[in-house]
Amino acid sequence: MMNFKEFKLKYKKKEVEIYPNQVMNNPLISVCVQTYQHGDYIKMCLNSILMQKTNFTYEILIYDDASQDNTAAIIREDESKFRDTIKPIYQTETHYSKELV
Image 1 (tube, one colour):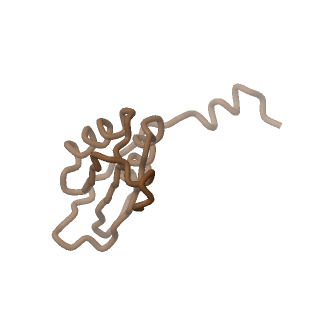
Image 2: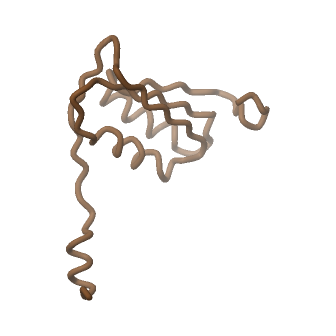
């Protein structure tokens, strides 16, 4: 059985490495992400997608249903860094509550 120090060392949080996957006009894969009020988690979600090593092109289609927290701001920040990869859709009004989704 490992002690706490060994556990902490083995499972230490690592820096995210983001690999430059260039999205051409016809990405092979579209990763679809729907979000609402996920400001605490959306950065981790996007990083986990962006850090994947691939030998094909992909895009991230992210739909924000008018979040009132910082979700949209975080998406905009990553969108500015990865313009060719992240394709956001921002709603100004929540569609889920209107049962339109």
